[in-house]
Image (cartoon, rainbow, N blue to C red):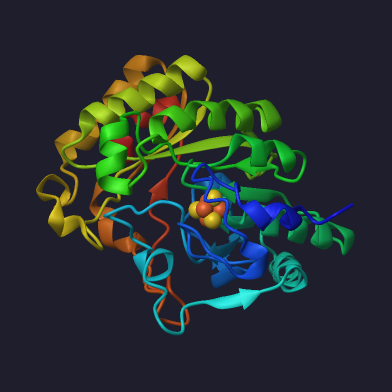
Length: 325
Ligand code: SF4
C-alpha cells in the first residue's frame, strides 16, 4: 500500500484545498511541508476526565494550523513558529514518539491540531500499530477537516475530539479566516459520528472510543454558542460535549473589542442553562475562574507546568451550579 502522504502532491488534506505539492517542499495556508512539525510531546492532565484519566493523555502538539484564530492560545506554535518551539518528525520518528508515550502509561495518544497533517499522522499510526501500539488514538482537531480525508483514515482513529467553533460563517471569517466553517462542520461531525459513534468509557471512566465535542464560549458571541449547541442537540441529544469557559484574550484578540476580555459568569451560565434546556444529557463544564490555568508557554521545555486540571466533568445532573461552579 502506498503511504497516505503520497497524495500530498496536490494537497487537499483539509478544506483549504491549496493543491500545493508538499512532497516537493511547497507549502500552503498551513505553512507545513511534507513532514509534520512537532512542538510538544508529553503526558497532559488538563483534558476532560475520560481523556486525561489518572495517568494522563499522551499529547502530541503539531505546529502550523489551517485556521487563523485571532484568539489562539497556542499562537506561538500554530502561527508564529517561534524559535526553538518545533521539530521535524518523520513517520518513523512520530511512531516512536507514540510508543514512548504508551510506555509511560498514557491512556491514549492525543494528536492536537492534526487537520493539516492528517495523512502524516495516519501513516505514523499504521507504523506504530505494527510495532505494538494498542492504546486509543485521539484526533483532537479544530473541526475544519476534510471529510474525504477523514474517510481515508477510517479505522485508524478511536476517539474524535473536534471543536465546533462556529455556526456562523461571517464570524468564522472574521475571527478565524474560514468563511465556510459553518458549511464544513456538519459533514465533518456526521462522518466522525458515523465512524466511532457516541463516547464509550471503560469501567474506570476512561474513554475507549467515540465522539467528544468541544465548544469554547466566546465573550460577546452567545448567539453563536446557542446555534452550535442547537446543532449538536439536533444531531443527537446523547452527544458528549465539553462546554469550555477558559477563553482568554490572547494573540490578536486585542484587535477585536468584543473578545478582548474573559468570559463573564452570567454569559457562561446562560450557555450551560441553554444546553440543559436543549436536553443535552452528556456535558462537561469548567470552573469559570480558570482562564489562565490552561495557557501553555511553548517556549518552555514543559509548556503546561503551571496548568491545572481544573476541567470538571459530569453528566446532566452535574450541570447543577452549586456542584460545578
Ligand atoms: S493541509 Fe495545508 S496545504 Fe493542504 S490544503 Fe490544508 S492548508 Fe492547504
